[in-house]
Image (cartoon, rainbow, N blue to C red; front, side):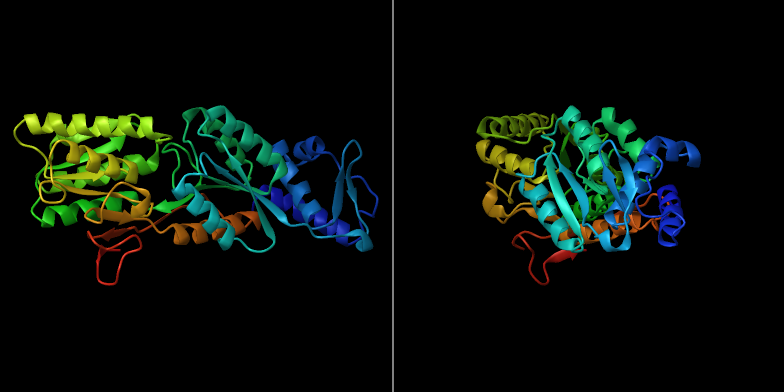
Length: 369
């Protein structure tokens, strides 16, 4: 049982039995933490849950006061949703799906951290005091790992969505990126491709980025097709505007041109995410490569085609946003109820969709799932 729940259940029994009468002021967070040998944040969580279920009222300067039966009102839980850009289609899809997956007694309070390490840290600290738990679409900045670890160790529920820092021990729910990448690249190999490049971000501390690269690397190694010169890593670009997208296209064009000049160019490109898919397509058009005749393009695509400058001729690796959100909501409920046990990383399979499958895929077009 989580330590906060031990404290909560002990106080709850004493309050409901009358051992601690109404109008009594409970010990402070500092005193409770010392008495039980826990952190102040753990003690805070116990008192916060007592307040949420209506047994006590927390008053500034007066402390935590026990309420009588006629005064008690159950309050909805507040869950923090920390995303670094919810205006992004993919993150917005997660935010919507999480709201739908949560029970009615929970209220989702969204905060945008603007992909800023300090803003993320400030939001985490604020939500640890004002909310019952957090869904975190993390920046994965190493500077915040210690803060997140402290929250996790204090039994405060933090559920990482989609991405999490590789070195961080915390609950995380997302896509099995390595397996999905392997399935996708294997589909390209079955089509006769032997030179398959990989375009990715320079964020190998982010588990999803590293796992997609690992999936590509493993299947190429196993097939005897490994060539480190086919890997191209680029700085992270949103892109936030046309200029930034133009930088992505130029980087993709430079990569393709350098491979063409070697005389043994790739016949397919596996892209980390949809913006690199779009950039690779535009770059191919610039240098006269026909897609898919000269170059096939595959990538994790989380936006409808009509939001990107790409046709239906690409291979799509699709993530189950709704399924991930449902499992994340279930995991949060387990944490909130103190029955979650150890840290869990739950990875759902993705889907490989052949060209022409459309945004959501059509019956019979899935290569794997």
